[in-house]
Image (cartoon, rainbow, N blue to C red; front, side, top):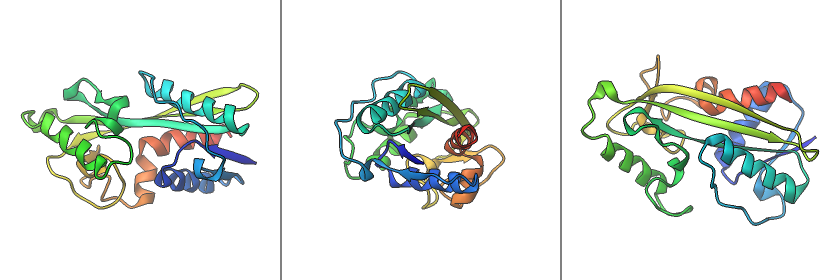
Length: 198
């Protein structure tokens, strides 16, 4: 069965492929670079679930393939859950801009600069939507609680991984191996639930 992950993010595609392999699913997972391009609507939802469904529905509409889309981000307690659904564009830089991840990360660190360490709680949140051409839809949510640190550490992962330490760990998620991160991550949890549903 062909299944489309509606993303151009190679790291997300690799991550979901690892989850599918671990679940022993014989699925050909495609990304947006593997199908004819179509006009992608902006993420206008106010929740992770809204944005995931918007992208998955759009992928089904244009490709006719069962499609998965996720929306994920960092929710910082001291920032009232922000950057949240705006995590990827928090700094205001457009997609594809050089060092956009770095700019987002630096802005969050600056915004919590005066917040005491004990109040730097945060969570990575992911909503993964599965939409079929016949209209069936399911959404799966995963969350990884932890806290922010003051300076980036690690070369793995992407986005805010270098400043996030999951509960029970001392390493940032950028310092974990891909397998260690998959086992506890918000996306890993949501994708594993989705794989079970498949």
